[in-house]
Length: 251
Ligand code: PEP
Image 1 (cartoon, rainbow, N blue to C red):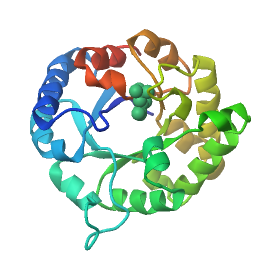
Image 2: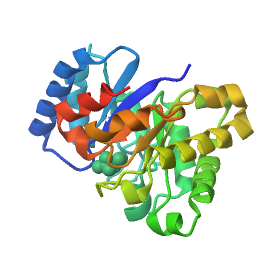
Image 3: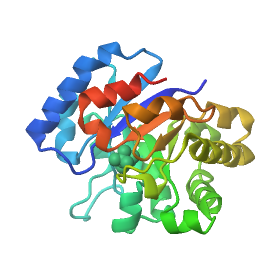
Image 4: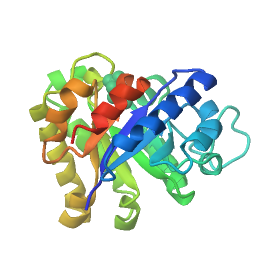
């Protein structure tokens, strides 16, 4: 059975003390959230160790926002999957569109990152999604298919149990412009089929596919009511514990 998940992506926001305070607020409010909903917060690297302490013993899981595509060594400025696991992370986001767009993250690199993350016991939230130009050109299905296949098809059905997909149309991220529930559902069902084509119906049915892109308390209910939308990857609204928890109460 697939899980309902609400994951907050803090991006490059909050200082360490602000992040600790936000994590404490999330943990305090998490008592209201039913056990059927998995809560995850993805913080900047600097915050992981102190926030791991805050979430310890709570229902909130910790995630990084990225990890290196190399195991270890002379890669100045990079943070390895082993480091993340040792810092207390359970998950890492990979392939966020901001990383693809600004930092040259390719599907090839994402395969390496995913391998290392899984090898170090981390679960992966793999982001896919088309930009505005691709959507307007009617290429959104092709883009989501190739981004999903290029990474996922390198892994086994067993690996799939530790991978969550987040469909994030780039034109909806941080823009206030949400995909309609119908637009999102159409792509989610399509991505599930792409998964089923390689791994079979059962593996695809068991996979959590999250929606991301200006998801907030006012639209989460309608999005999460869709058959193939299993929760959200939340950016801006994850920076307010109250909004984040409100979204988690929208199933
Ligand atoms: C994100 O960056 O993953 C995201 C969904 O951002 P926002 O909710 O702010 O659109």
